[in-house]
Length: 107
Figure: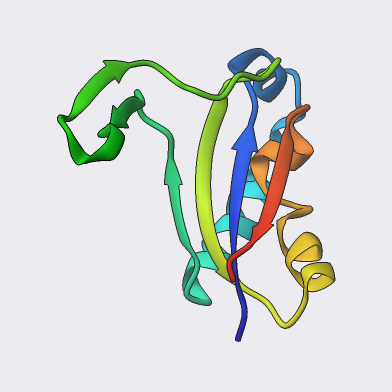
């Protein structure tokens, strides 16, 4: 079955202004996705890694990507189609708590 990487963006303020029952349902949805084999994690502090022409590794703290909202987490899910993957993530915390989720097909 095809796999998809999802990137959830959201901040604490958006999460906290979402009603508790909606947040609880979103976390229950995440738990169902995990029980179906999804790998879900909360984002920690990023580190950039470069090794141009394999001539020497360089690392830098901080994200390379930028967004209006911070990255909150990632998931790897399986779905029969992009449409099914979108449906699966439409009820996760970032999607319902004033954030956004990107869905990237793995090829």
